[in-house]
Length: 234
Image (tube, rainbow, N blue to C red; front, side):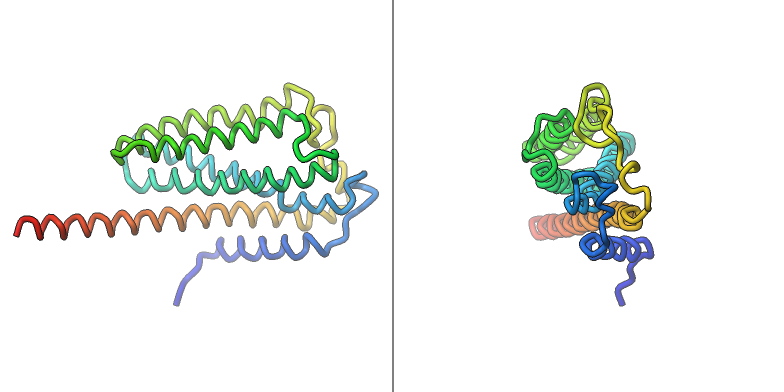
């Protein structure tokens, strides 16, 4: 019988709850300004960014761990978490573009936070290109680990610091009120907080699955190479 960790059950339940309740729970219209029902995007767009930050942090920590110990598992964790982070970031951009169309009248309005997020995703896409361009696996792992640290060091200012230095139309930046000003009755919080927990847990779960798959593939490849060596020596 397949055993699933308790935190995975919680993550799955929270995601399902956020998806169902996100479309059914009433929105406090007067407290969401002109957002109306588009405010439901809060349950998906923002938690995806939380999940992205979480797994990209895991990725850079594992890259540092690889540079210290050169363990294959740390390298696999780094690239797997980065993959999930880019997927989450892309979904975050797409949901943000959809929300922006209804809220600001444009899929890509001129906003420092939007452009910063897009640039950050391009930087991480270059991480995968760099990794695949180097044939030697150990060299690729080491160079991509160094690049991952650089990417994360650029990513943090683009996402969190730059929007606070310049005017941004996003809530909580440029003098705009944060969402706490909109959900005073706590209705949206009942869905938002479980969504954050669920999407973060799902991101971790996906990263773990990708890492295990890479470890199995590496083990299988090592076994096949060993068989080829035995056959050759005979």
